[in-house]
Image (tube, rainbow, N blue to C red; front, side):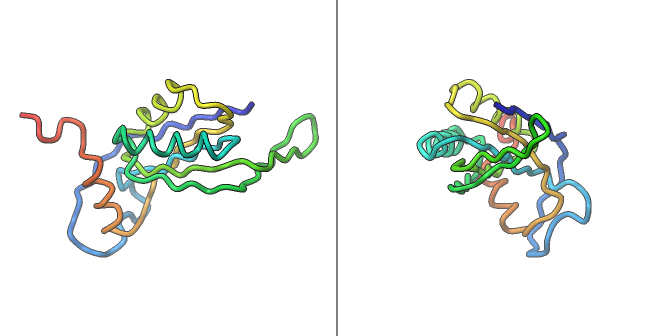
Length: 139
């Protein structure tokens, strides 16, 4: 089974009230975590758990994906997989990974984080509202 984890570095950027895309080749402070699993039941359990644990604002479940990789000089296809895209703060990528690993979900073949360099300002603000920065509100 392939296991890959790419950790994204944390970076903070202030949130503004415009509808313009945020980014321009810099960090937005948000990441997408791609998780590939072997079945829909595990995918939905992971998605529900990440959202309820407040480590992902939203998880998109994409059934029917196929991974192609090289093994022994041959292209190998793994069909029937389910891909999840978890939207989270870059500073929370480690917590997403910890949640998935700690709950020992079956059939996980990939877990990779990609930092969002630009995106719709309203949507990114929505992620930030659902996932407050750690320590925010504590005084």
